[in-house]
Length: 270
Image (cartoon, rainbow, N blue to C red; front, side, top):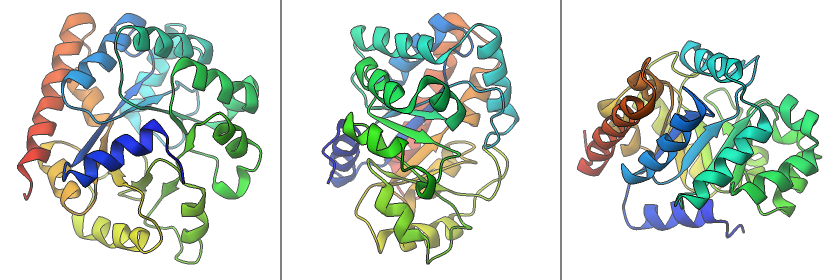
């Protein structure tokens, strides 16, 4: 069983009865320095861990909000190496939350799977989600990541067949990411009842924390999903809250939005 910072932090919070809040930020969006400040602000606003998306030119799992954020970051010069530098720099500025990198496999393959895992760990990452790499095809990368102490998070979707579910969960470390809708990020509004069924299926096979993501539009949606899971991951709605702002205005907008979500999760039942 993993004893990583990601899993131990989420387990400890869950076991205290806290509903988990994991914000998603696109790396170097809206710009490099603002992105670094956003990570620190999320920590102050009550996040339990952070997910950082590595900007990619063909983000097939992402909806228009995160697609635009990726395009903006790439236009600003974001690269995998720069993202690693960013995380390392923010660690030195006091970021203590666990960090999960979300990426597609092309950037990892171009970097080199073993080299990427080593560099991510050295930068201060705690886990990796390669969104287009199912566990059946992760035979090269997953062992390399785990050898560096990184958790490997895989997606469970409403369409995941029951017969395949144990194999997916066998590869999960850190937590289980339940995709709450069929579609891309920010595309649809999830139904808590459907998510509850999916979470119940997952819990028959694992004691890992189970988080719901995709389509978490605001505080009421977050609270509704957290009632039937261990917490939520919020990305598109958070980036929408930031809007076209940058610098201090972007940090204030993100922090305000996350504090509203934190308060909603702490209130409990919808």
